[in-house]
Amino acid sequence: MKAFEFTATHRDPETKARTGVLRTAHGEVETPVFMPVGTLGTVKGLTQESLETLGAQILLANTYHLYLRPGEQVIREMGGLHRFMSWERPILTDSGGYQVFSLAALRKINDAGVEFRSHLDGSLHFLTPKRAVEIQACLGSDIIMPLDECTEFPTSAVTAEKAMNRTLAWAAESQRTWNTLKTLAESNGQPAPENSESPNPNSKPGALFGIVQGGTQPDLRRECARRLVEMDFPGYAIGGLSVGEARPLTFEMVEAAEGCLPEDKPRYVMGVGLPEELPQYVALGVDMMDCVLPTRNGRNGLLFTSQGRLHIRQARYARDPRPLDESCGCPACRRYSRAYLRHLFLAGEMLGKILNTAHNLYFYLDTMRRIRQTIAAGGFSRFSYDFRSRLQGEVP
Image 1 (cartoon, rainbow, N blue to C red):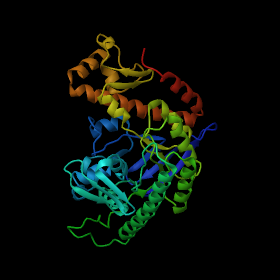
Image 2 (cartoon, helix red, strand yellow; image 1 turned 135 degrees about the vertical axis):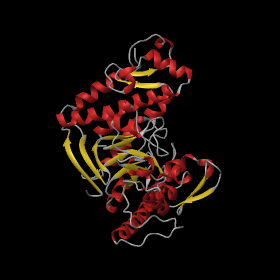
Image 3 (cartoon, helix red, strand yellow; image 1 turned 180 degrees about the vertical axis):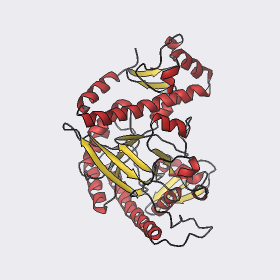
Image 4 (cartoon, rainbow, N blue to C red; image 1 turned 90 degrees about the horizontal axis):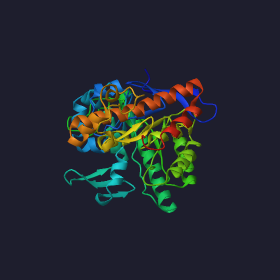
């Protein structure tokens, strides 16, 4: 199997929605796909067996957090992230750029990289585009994200352009590093010294995507996309969104960038979105998405159903024998009542958080399955309209 390949399989005649297949060294992924977030090599509250049962095809892990703990060398010595966390399916790792961005009081950015202090112990670190790729190569990621600069919202056009140009320069440096690692692997070079921080050159790095930045300036988004396409990455992400801007503006930025990206490469919008937004991103031509919303909200008792949002702590569910969602096939809905799930949540029992998380994640993954099916069958636009109409409010 090739290390990375993407093929579009079906297209919706009324929108830019499409289905496809991502082929990686750890298996195939049907797109459009939602990627559960496993920040520290774990999706909170769920075992890998549970994730497989729920239908997760690919997980996202966080370079920043894994670099700090347990460290990429530990994971490398354990055989890579797949073996370390006992997950045989594909893994995408982000660069850690967004996490560093969120540590505004603990970091300094310059053209060489990002200096930051660990949120764990205050130790000082310097992350460069080169190191970000090397760390992810150590992890054995199937898809690698380069270091980029994410701007806050709102921000000026001048600031957004500066961050965009820095992101492009870092993308070029990341690509040079990736090419070096690939060459070493293909030449079957000697293993790295025992105390080296570089990845083993015998380990071929995963596919490196480019990341489109540009704030909320459509012209910058288009420029960034065009310049990244000139570098010829195997896939492209659209980053720096869902940081406080109104959702129509988010969609506008996605559309601006997508229009400049090639048809034969996968498109990934980072950090989105709410359930009712999933078909909207797909309609814009998006193939990949990730978000912490299903798991985080599940732990906090906010559940997504086919009839809208359900707050399980509400008193009206105290004697409700119905499942969360009568049309849902998740483990929580097949076996447990709203009354029981409310009891678990109010009692602070961990089982409640686990079941809520499993339900929300299943709802997202099942929504993506239905999206793929309706695109292939020619009914995507109707599905999208009906789905979004049902999810506008709360469960009656």
